[in-house]
Amino acid sequence: MLTPTAIQQDGDRHPAGVARLSRRRLLWGAAGLVGASRALAEEALRHETAEDALGPFYPLSLPKDQDFDLSLVAGHKTRALGQLLYVSGRVVNPRGEPIANAVLEIWQANAAGRYMHPGDTGDAPLDPNFQGYARIRSGADGSYLIKTVQPGNYGPRTRHIHFDVRGKRSRLITQMYFEGEPRNEADPLLKMQGPEDRKTLISRPGTPTGKQERDAMAVSWDIVLAFG
Image (cartoon, rainbow, N blue to C red; front, side, top):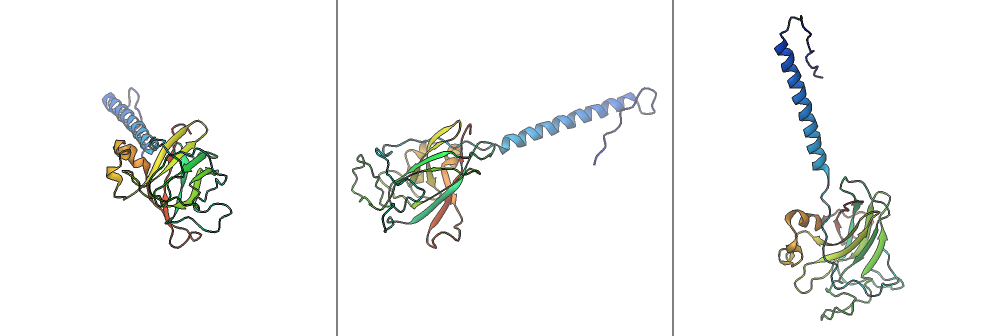
């Protein structure tokens, strides 16, 4: 441990100028430590997840089945068509502190790129076994999990999943995108986001657990609410 040079009084053998120099060094050193601490604190703050469009296909009537598993409708024996997908992450504030009991509404197109919405008049087929919507809450540690299918492309849009997240003091309407999708660069909404905001909307490949199907995909995406 470094010990600062003692301040000498009048009459000591060290000249007064040396004492003043020691004071300056101590002051500059303290200022440097404070500045470094502030810089580290600011760097530690997470960038808030960017807002994105609600879109035209928010359900007009919510399904009775709203659990975390969008790939299976309650009472049906057959799962939805498409690549099984697990999406997990945490809802936190910019300091990384968990937001417990946040409400997450989630909706998306099916594997063919069709929404269960009368406004979606595309040619892609509907899937009666696809729930298409979920309403869940984050856990005590801010964690959330959904099981779904990879959404299909439609029109000019790249693959995406819609989120409406309500914390204690914040509400965020946004969309989650997938890393490495070839249509990301041309997507009209994703192109409108700045570089830093765009990073907050892209999920990352996750690690499947032993409880997930062998052929299932997994992605990870944390949601940062401005005020918790």
